[in-house]
Amino acid sequence: MDIYLIRHTTPEIEKGICYGQTDLALASSFPEELKQIKEKRVRDFDRIYASPLKRCLQLADEFGNQVRTDARLMEMNFGAWEMEAWDDIPADQLNPWMADFVNTRVPEGEAFQDLIIRVNEALHEILESDLERVMIVTHAGVIRAVLGFFLGLQPENLFRLNVDYGGITRVEVKRGMYNVKYINR
Image (cartoon, rainbow, N blue to C red):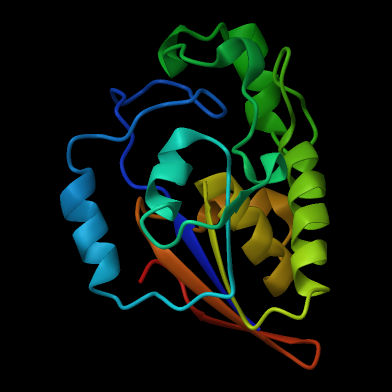
């Protein structure tokens, strides 16, 4: 099986704002970013999965009309922090989370471990299928969780992996072996 993980393109939001499951539109640069992705010749998939958020669905729909949405592929839920400037989040809330974002839940939201659990559930279903070429259009946190599974990385180290807007990551799965072919192509 070949799995192509594609991060949505640039969202329409100013820098420094905390967002995860907020349903943002894509920036006006979408047509150019889409062109760059299509130039990389990603096509002919047995199935396309996507986060149900429109910043992923808009991109996924450009590759096929049979997109399957899965809420488990959504970005981390930042709860009470959604759409707040990172600089405005009270230190007494932010600092404990920063010290252990893997296990500490955001107020009214998730911890990174919660995201990992739901993403792994979705990933296992995909891996158990008889599909040969799969596209997953999703978010940076989800892609990091998938790479963590394939590479056996500790969750606290996953944010060392940069995942670009519109970046393509390819993983080849053969006979129980995982080969990360590239990240951010």
